[in-house]
Amino acid sequence: MTYRFQQHVTGILISILAFSNAGRQALSQEMTPAEVKALSHSSAWQGGRGGVTHGPDGKVLFVFGDGQASIICAPLQVCAIELQAQETVKDVLVGDSVRWSVEAASSGEGAQQTIHLIVRPTEANLATSMIVTTSMRTYHIRLRSHESRYMARIGFSYPQTASSQIAIVNARLAARGDAPSTGRLDFAYRIEGQAKWRPKRVYFDGDKTYIQFPAGIANGEMPLLFLMSDGARQIVNYRVNKDLMIVDHQVDAAVLLAGTGWRQKKITIRRGR
Image: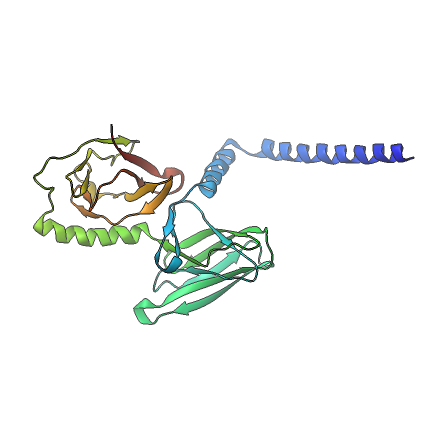
């Protein structure tokens, strides 16, 4: 009797597995080539290693648009997502709105008023997505919950904001110039990758590192510069003067990024031939 029962259960399991495989195959067969390509691009963006670094007071900073920000929260704890100053929230949409709660708080006044989204999961080992639309942009965020580990403070750095600030500094520098020292220049840098804005050369004058772009780049899209350390990207302070990107110290490894998603272009820079 026991043997027959086991055979019956085994048959049921085999049928369920066959039905599941058939369902996946049917879904795959129903997808058009364009849908498969679009899904591949979306999956690459969602699973990409976007730029992330640490900010002041323990804040985790994600580069907005550089992949989908993945935020880890924990039950009985709160994750505070800080938006840009003067940015107002229009809508918050959460895939799993039953087991995740999102509330809004604010800090500062006037031009410094900032919205914080307070995120809390009800249990561990959850995963969902969240979309936040604001007066300035749309955030696509992945939410995951861990039994004890969590990110207390989360924020973003904004490439467009950085570009506008660079333009202001650029105008100031144009009046007084910013040239390398007259000492011996070190051109021992490798430049890898393809983009229309690919640097012509990189050199170090013993004090500063200079990244020289093709003429006229100031009229187009200036890429963002990140230092590389132990395989992770770190935000670095730099300034731009016409076709020169200037860093006030020696650069050993860095990456230049422009665009987002599958349209993103990347150039790597490494010291040494």
